[in-house]
Image (cartoon, rainbow, N blue to C red):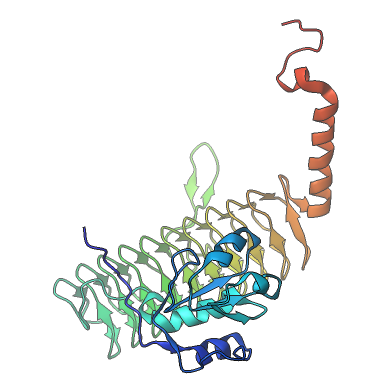
Length: 357
């Protein structure tokens, strides 16, 4: 089988440009006009490649790398081989990400799957929809009446853009995703299989459960990214809102009336119950569960697999089930571990200390 490369590097980047992206000067003696042809991990990088290192686990790989140039943190710079130009900077990963985006601009957002531009054969666009010049609609996609789509946006194959939905400019709507009752800003990325704007889970409970009509919308602001197979329910009586610059991983559930602030990070497997508010810059680790009608304060961070059942103050770090400040959580874990040690080896496996069954 041929070694297919899906992302071909763009024009090479000079060593001087690498240093500029990192915000530092190029080391003395390095050739500023020398170029890199690509980027690669430390282990496989060659003399024409860029690499980076900012984790102690990869110290041995750094010492043995053949990369032509490497972005590296100050504490690891001494382990960089003499043949590799070490660009020492405070945030190697961020600089590497910026340079990787220049090398592979087509990897920054999903592109057309059919390879063309404009309306592909088999695309279904209602006559009352309004598409600016430069919109691409792949085969099998459906764009409903009254929908509006901005220039530079790509609608993937078999995606559905419902009636009246508005999508801004330079967005990417992934294959098989569905958008209804939603308004999206500019440069929004919706990955394949995501669902935006469907009913929230609302019922008046009783002997028979009466469905509560969900009459709100989903508002997605500029530069939001929503992962594959994530679901964002529309509001019940007010809007579900996702703030500017927020990044949401795959397989996340966001319920009706949830308000998420700007530049939040929500990792895979998270479930956020209805009418909860996340203020700006909140981070939720993988598989966090948040009950309804809570407020998580600005800049708070919740450790993975935690369950949040009360309001979280701004700037705090919580973890555990139920979630609590990390110091209290760590004390609990340490206390439990000490109790288990004191109980002795027989107690650990559920047997009694005297050997009785």
